[in-house]
Length: 410
Image (cartoon, rainbow, N blue to C red; front, side, top):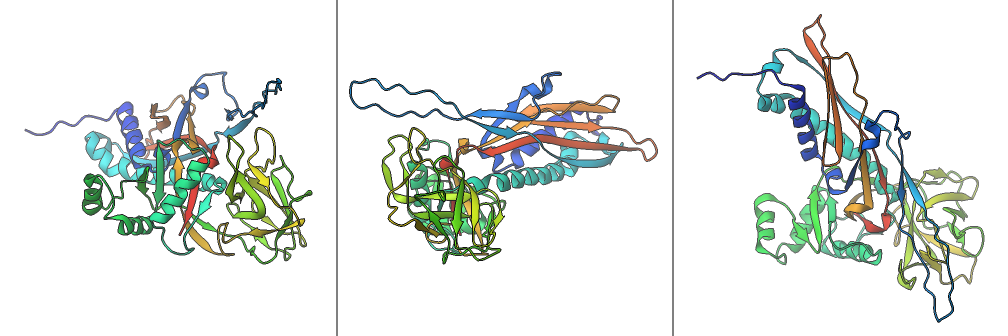
């Protein structure tokens, strides 16, 4: 009996396209995803700005005497303004295909390309804000030691134990599998490595292999000269700008460059006890030195006292504390390194919103799945008997809890 084919409906195409997009995503699928329904309500637009409330922090009193403190809430702004899409022109004949055939021939390659672009955009916009950074040897693939170092960074940032992920490229995955093939448990994880080439679950992390793993290129700065006045205006508590001196003119920092400052140590986020490692800072905006001075905007904003204290100047015998960019930072000047990412899903947030549904077209449909809103709009070209179709997603993203993430250089 011959198969009877029916014309595909708007809902069929939209649901299938969204399902494929969701499955093809790697990074976005592993992070916090939210859907803001306010964008779909006429008259309730908020200009694409979402406020994310940060956790409140408090100091602890010692003794019986009451010492009240004001509750000062702080927020971060996330902008939903990135629109990506794929535009397709297909014929009326192709619309008579079965849904599976249509998906395989048209939707699968289109959604794979869109998913790659969404993942790449979000990763590139988020990873430079991750200031935790570790490596064994720059330029070599990470091993299990690096995984444990990243685990320590997350633990010291009080990262929740569940929902931890490591995203790495195939070379890093090969290295980690080779280093630990004989120690993993349970046996099902070992089978996955041999049968499927998958790392599986390691030291509390679920591994995802992706060639979208970011490559960071450092600026032309070096370890030889930069210094910071740690007892003056060079490092000011509450200011996200750190002024450095002794740079050669035109020396550059790139967004995502990481450095430490001698004598400036990280602290426990709750108890404020000083850790045994220097606080790492990441540059958030690319900058070039003016004369011998460079004022970098960094994350985290250094706070040296109070409830939001995140670092402590332990030794300030000299106003000129050396900046370290290799042992405690992101590596050699003008050099590129692949940065695998270890993170909790809530370290990053991805938010989608509904695009407007146009009138007077052949069809327009919009669906939401797992926090992702996707719109499909199709019209008819009578001259060429074609159906031009656009598939769009509107989203925003942000690294909201960078202390819950760590970069692993290779």
